[in-house]
View 1 (cartoon, helix red, strand yellow):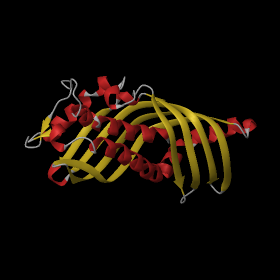
View 2 (tube, rainbow, N blue to C red):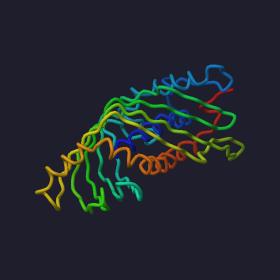
View 3 (spheres, one colour):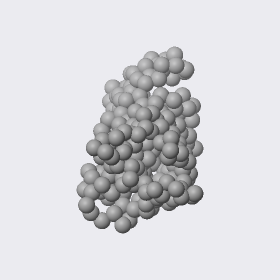
Length: 249
């Protein structure tokens, strides 16, 4: 599930370009957009995609970490319905491939503080530690150890519902709600269960034979969890950057 968080982090990193503008250093690599532009969505799309070369190594002036590799300290996920009912925690996750994102579509209604982003990432490789308990197909599951995963052809959409906030006579956009969804073409997993090492081959065979179903079952709870992470991440950026800085009249 760590790929989902990567997708969401990719979106949030794109939006952190506003924080760059708020600082006193060169921001010539950022394409500004006008709210009165009839092609505003196309401008935002081009601006977001233009940031990719600069995000690979990060932007230390605003505390933005590199995207290669992209590190995730921890992520929790829980599903209490369907054939897969589990609670899991993924930690010390290291991901490669996140910087190769493409913003495929932007839909905005700036007057209502609404933004929808469609993003495509061709491939993400992840590794880290996991701890999972629950049941799969009525069978009890209790597992912890290391994992390696690969996710291909990921399409995600983030629906951002903002609201205006005025501070010191400046208007800011804060995130009121966020909805995230995703699909992917394929996924592969390899785990090293430290408690049941003799079963690793059986576990990996099951995971990969049922990868599509596993991803579909966990899609909704993963999306909800990642939306919370994404919202918190974006709030930090928007709280320090007035609207006028990244969106001209």
